[in-house]
Length: 454
Image (cartoon, rainbow, N blue to C red; front, side, top):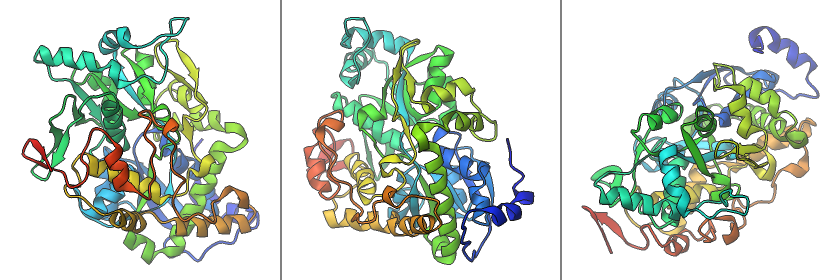
């Protein structure tokens, strides 16, 4: 499976179709990733020779956790990485480690799920509507979890759930689901960064590959994570995914490819070459109605990439998703890598992450709408993306119609019907959006001690 990149790169360059190689400032690069299926564009760009075609000699290195990965990019041990979308934003505004990280490429849409243990599932089921065949009706609201949480609280038991990082999509998606069902997921303050102030459900960090084992041990009762770690719980018979993020928010943004602003400034042609290769990988993953997905599954199952069983990875990568054991449903857009402009780094995606940071107190003070816009534009770089796309179109390696050339960087508002709580999202009006959410900080509110004031 592995390509012998160092030996074949020169030959590949000679036979590539109409390739106009850029004058690279740096051609030996190391990229980091976490063992999740949405790192696929990096693996595909490597294995299919798309990095080679650009004259790039790339090494891919799995990282222990998201903090190690971010630190590696900041200190230069990694030239770039598969990142949580919240990481470049949080670093740039100084929440946690401070550094100016940018993203010229979004890795994917959707791809996450929320799983609970078998015990919690059995306690939720009486509160879940079922169809005539006895199957749970999806999407499943956290309102069905609320009486379970209340029962545990009455018995003096903390209700613990896992997410992968404080600024992860998974943290915000789990919080969104809980809040939409009437549960308080807790707040952050400058003095208390646990995120558990006033929480009905206590959320804590667990690295993705450790999620199933941590739940099986009883340390957490459920979690939000990317694949294949929801399907792994089903395969092991220890848990049930209750909702995918596609059901939570249709075609929501997921991971990004992150580099430092300094890297992009010092190596502009190298940056373009990397984005070109990643766009080609994303096209390959989605082309011809996902015809290449089984090949991608074979690739990702290799131990150096995700290292999970092929059947487990295929359960979500090929357009289906298994909930309760044997309850396999069609979810063709569970993983999206290119269609719907998945790879374009929209400012509105960045703004949504920032609103969630503000909603739960990671951004302690109210900010103006213009602040959200300015931060989004300092981190998300569609201009680099479109420059790379233009080169691919000129080389005959991409279709001009597949890119949003005339976009102002903001998606059309997400309609209420595409989000589980029925509340529409418009990235151009972040404060009005925050005000529309029944649970969470709004206006000039702030967390002081254990109370919300304002």
